[in-house]
Image (cartoon, one colour):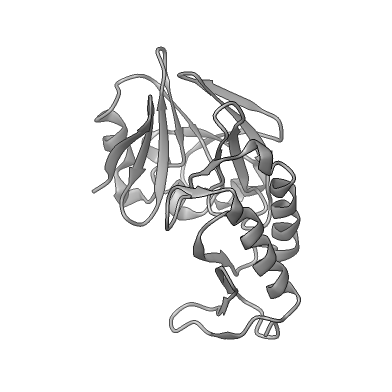
Length: 228
């Protein structure tokens, strides 16, 4: 069951205990960030809050974020993640600098490839609020294994977010502790650099095809055993 909690005025966090979505309700329509797992029944959670038309925007294309898409039928997503979406979904492109406004919130698209090639974050500069999908987290694990991920790009994207740190106070990740502060951008970056530089200890994951690497602040699931 997906729990619904109002985090700010007209801004709701939807959480099934595995992954979060974010719902903004305006006067004319609503804006939903991500759709969770298919069995999360996010549409039901949305309709418990509003009957308004819903626009869907996506942080990235992993199945725990796109599973509920068929209940909505269409979304805005970065084209580099379109291949991750299954089913008869109408996909609209989004790109760096695009703006999505709803209910007094203005979300700016920031391209942050790495966790996936089409990963984006949404930033409300006035409210200093960042929705980074899975790319900024406290503790982790952050998934970085598989062919649709790139550690070097992830590091560059964290540097890009770090350059905008003064515009960010509150970060709402889709997994683990929420909210967190902007300091976790640099913490994730430093540990990702250590992973790239092969200075983190690693061990095989017990059930997934990857290795577990624990940094000072962040754990990564990564698929290169040489990065020890």
